[in-house]
Image 1 (cartoon, rainbow, N blue to C red):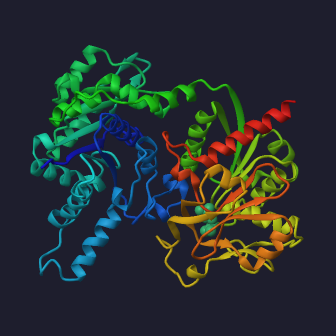
Image 2 (image 1 turned 60 degrees about the vertical axis):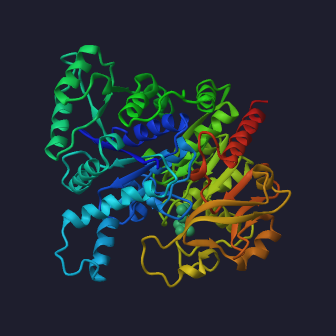
Length: 540
Ligand code: GLN
């Protein structure tokens, strides 16, 4: 029977080195050679999941088909591999402890003292092996969040040490991602921080098998030799990861450096099949050689932190390549959109995207942006809160419900055109309780969306508590709002469009989560196309 192979990715020296991108790039190369690969992220924080985290803390919360609220690295895994992830692909310390404590309360430990070793480490090892034991994968890559030496990562490092021993040399390996800083005053790349972080890993009983070295300058042979000698790895296991202009270059850079070859060799796997990357490279080629440019405004309130809207930004990259245009995304802070600046801010755009979000801050600016796009016939895409803002704007300015609002923002509004979902009313806990994950949506024929998707029923991912209030359906529709997608079981309104507007779409779900390199999301592709057409009409 074939054994699943396990690859662990740890980080040293500094955070934010891009472990997720390295893991996804290696996975891509292995997948391109015919292996079935998945990637898992272990996060050492105590939150059960990032669903309760402010985007400023940890970037976007990514949602899977099965409704897990997860780390944004899972988005990279899906975008690179085009394989769906699930709850099992993201584990946090909070979840590990919750599960162990629940078992203790049920008496499952038979009177034993419950301890980090073995109870927490056993739970971690079990979570790592769930994916491998499913039989769906030849290789499981597990990325450990944080930096080696952090107190909170210790149980994870110990679990890897044990697993490496249990699985055996040929079935597992550790890739340590580290930083080689460049001291400009000395004009030198420095290896000492890497030596120290490899040593820290060794203090926990783990010898790194492969070093991936982030660097701003190329590593020469002498430096590679030094790293190999002092970190106890073969020279061919010292892999340079030079800064790239796009994350989508990293698989090819890793291919050139032989990261996949050394991995396969160490895991005793066949390395004879050349990687099939033609679709990937076709995308890269289009991404790097756009024929024109469009500017799309991303109206949100977390715009200072690019990671907050990660999946949206990546979806624009995929859709841009598909249309062979460069999508210039202009981040616009919704709090600063006032009557004085609206015309200047929005009129130069070829498309307006109003972003998802929670709470009252910045919503009036979003509503103004919707109004401007509607009245000036600028292509518009509203996602989740963005769709809700479009309904409120229509209610206020077309139906004359001057104080129309969502009960999330104003529970006392006389016209709650957006209201809390029935099923949400009794829920008190904040974590994991929204309407989450993939839900069906039936599309109305002869609508923008039915042409865009070319399907009658779609599956898209959700993350919300509020919804279009059916009590206002008749009046809004009579005034020209079109409902072009609904949930077949509950009748919930999932998509709105407008009469008398060339491209205006609001969706209650998050299309951005499902856009991948090999499968750019059709709604983003169509939105970028509409923006391109609109920019041409402006030039004429
Ligand atoms: N705050 C809104 C709701 O809960 C929208 C959520 C979102 O944009 N993801 O319904």
